[in-house]
Image (tube, rainbow, N blue to C red; front, top):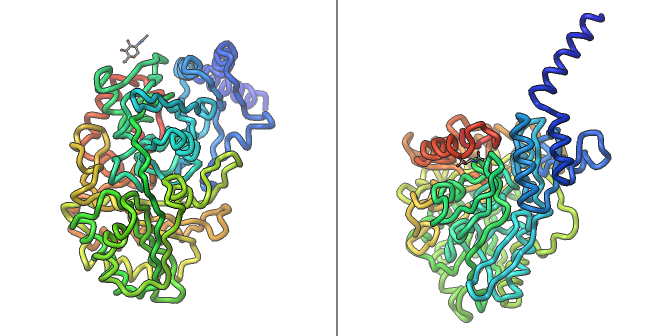
Length: 503
Ligand SMILES: *[C@@H]1O[C@H](CO)[C@@H](O)[C@H](O)[C@H]1NC(C)=O
């Protein structure tokens, strides 16, 4: 017995030595940063994941209010052999904002959420803890806007391609991205803390290799504390629009083929659009929607833009063109009716995958039919909740594709559609149903297995899936090797380590 206890004590002592728990604590105390440790009353809500499928216990959750404090935390963590991870909005699908394992030093960025706008340069400086809803509302007061996703709660940090700094949503993709590009394409400068705690500026003229890596793989290279972003004049007329059908599988498959051709033929930049597919009313049917945002002229222009698609489809069972005509109101409607983020956010228990489909080889009619058959049959039978969306990235007028692919780390520029396959437990609470994995895997396979074996699709880092084998290729494509070399330069001792991070 005594023997066992002393062994345990030795093991514990070793663990403490490796991890330097008390040194970490005293270093954090010296920096003056607020820190929440396991055992404190706040800890369980502070460490809760947005996706209830994950449950991790960090070593500590810190709440810095200055870049100097972020630097002190990174140094304290690194010197004591902890992995350090930033959490911006906390929406990561795989709880990457907690590091994807127990025992990490979490840097919660919610105290660094200031938003300022400079009229002479049209640049906004945004703390990465700022929520998208606040950013949109604040910039709108200046008659300015930036491209971003629909979820008001998502933190800016995670959004622009650093899913681990928060969450869900787009490498900065949003419904205005065909007109303005990805959010990260508008970032002129990062203020970032690298692995050894040094505070650096990364822009096209300063630390340009780091700047390149931050645009698409940011969380692997440092903790960005704020970004300077180019803003755009708010469109003078905007509407949120939606068309809705109940279709059988073959009609839905043809609609999907028509949807791809319509985008490739050149829809206006001012049109943001996604296809939306969910459980039908009965076996063999699919609920189909096409919806989006219009930021162009008043009058017939929206109808004219939609007509080439709508004229090929059956009459919708309903349609809405909504909003008071202002950009901010259309954005509010797209964001579920509110841009207010003052109330606590909700959570979910979910699993998602994504497919970024290349413009050079779009989903074939056969693959489309196989997919829709799956949705109409397995999709009706499953007890797992789901919706699949197909966001339009491409087409000849898209600003996403206008940029050379090697100009940033983001690998999937020449994408026609980003398809998100999102599933959730029926009541949103744990546990996630085991059959849900097979259902979602099968839905993705219904497309991929019907395409040629060398089909060059990718996956979207802000819809992260930690169950993929060849994730390096799927998420980072041809840029992985350079990213890996830069990882050795900027994070040689591997402070920033998390699932799907550059190794
Ligand atoms: C921190 O890391 C950067 C990038 O590797 C390096 O240039 C710099 O010299 C390092 N600073 C210190 C104090 O070690």
